[in-house]
Image: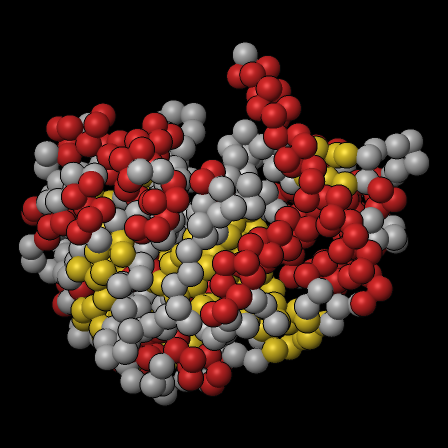
Length: 524
């Protein structure tokens, strides 16, 4: 039996899954990580913790009696994006057993780099110019601001840096002794030429970054190395097992849902909300104004092989999606089950009797790149009850996701970014009410795929392509992923939400200055 191993280095845990050539999940295991917050707004992890968790997760799946390590044909890696792992020269020699980071990695959700982001945009000639050069605006989550922060604030550490990489790439270094990254993760660094799928010499020169510090770049399904004897002894895998480049968690999650061709979009409603679309050509969000450029991110898709470059993707992320519902539950109705709250919301007509919720509880990233954005109930009257509050929250989150879809259509309509069907993932896909609500607000058919393993499963499919089980990622997805439920939008309800959207999309612009002013009271 041929088995494929996918590993996802997430923020809270590392997960490993093993599937067969039909996509059947044979085993899964997870091991948690410790999150370090040395100061408010700082978020770090020790890369050695990722390695320890990876070893535990791999051994966990291999402990399944139905799995033989000798039958694992390939390994794929997914990981949290944008994190900065800084490596000394000694880590780059040998079999990976001595690879150690110089300091804890700054993570994707670390917020300390606002001044570096502003400096990056000034140096590039403005936000729109930066988007044109590297495909994305400067956000605190991206990698380059973190590298600049360390260079500025910890020069003694920076002086010892011989290379930097992304989180999953550190784990691959431990597994194979080879340092590399993939085009998808590289596209989230602000140092990558997304159009040409290679490091940007211009960006490196502008920001005085040595190109020799960057890892070599591979397509996601290309072979990146093989399990070393040392790593085999640590994990239980067989020495020589192929390991492919893999990609970031967004790209791998899309592959795990079968979103690898134009017209098919992935909408994931977790704590945050992510819309992902596959495009045949790179499309950049130049925005309606300089401040709106880069609302959605232009990345490289994970479907390339050693012999054939892959395609591109658009990604938009709102910061508080299902997290908004969790806030409402925990703050106001902690003793009421979610199912009860959602049942009451379902009993309320569309539009929640004129009550609207803006879900910007932790600032916003897309569709409004504004860290000062705030949440709000608008239109509240004495007629509104608990069901109205819940429905307004769920509708507000979904209307914001619809706004991201509309940006996609404006940016990439001629390259297939206009959605025809939406695959659903995350907690928002688990309830029939919210699934139908998404169909009605998007005005599109929504689908549930047959797998819930997400990025780790996508990484396993990439391993299968690299190992020759399938010719390409599209074939892998067609061979393993099917739709278990399809829901069409209701024309009348969609028309109601189209009218509501006309009012909803005016609320943030109307309140933007008030949000900024209210923030001064919060800080005081």
